[in-house]
Length: 105
Image 1: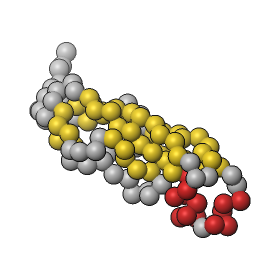
Image 2 (image 1 turned 45 degrees about the vertical axis):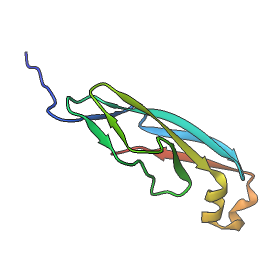
Image 3 (image 1 turned 90 degrees about the vertical axis):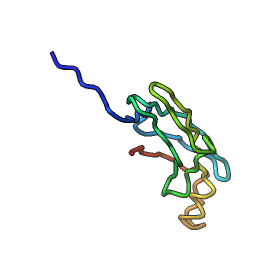
């Protein structure tokens, strides 16, 4: 039998990806998931960002420090209006947009 222990922080996400489904133009949809520190040392989360402008992080608004087994709820917003602006107005013929986000660290 072997037992392994983490000597530092270990981040766990409750979601591998999020599907926002179809969102009417000009509207937005929000989804939540949580991050948990499964390690033995504190986990400092200084920011959570997306490189895709259609997704914004609504919460947490500030840096978070998670001790062992603590969690923080993350709220992401998908904006169909931003998606149309990025694609151009010719893409706005459809009345909805679909948003999906893949999470990684």
